[in-house]
Length: 201
Image (tube, rainbow, N blue to C red; front, side, top):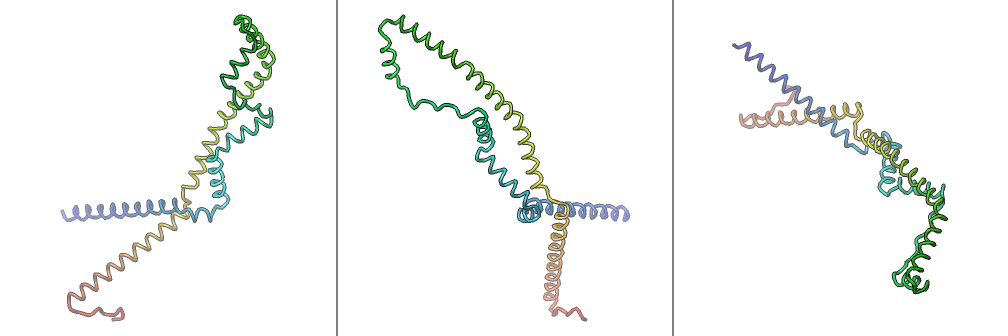
């Protein structure tokens, strides 16, 4: 029965040690992952690229670039009229005459002529809209994927950094354990009415 107890105790101690090691590794990984200063020092170009890329996305850069490319290839669109008030429209229609059928016929003929004249330009604009939409649709997943990869690289700690953090945590815990042991020894010595003895004997 004593062997079973010792075996169980050894398993509990081993489990506790494994858990403690896992906690140390998790803490070290977390510290290394959020250590932005160290990441910037190790990879300043990547860090600058992430900042510039994030800023570009925040200010709507992709849309502005696509709009600029569209304007460079096909020219700027004509500006919209400042205003066309209903009173102005009514005055223009009234100027065409008082016979409703003749006015309607003239408006339909002029509108038909306008559509025939502008059809080639509107087809070009439609083609441009389709091309820009296709380009945006195709490039968006790639931009999102690349952005995620950059974010993951910035958050994932390097193995050497994690090991360095593990060493720091173990040293801090050992110092805390030594301080606690010294305090316990001092308290026991004080309780026994003895002065602490120097290490030399």
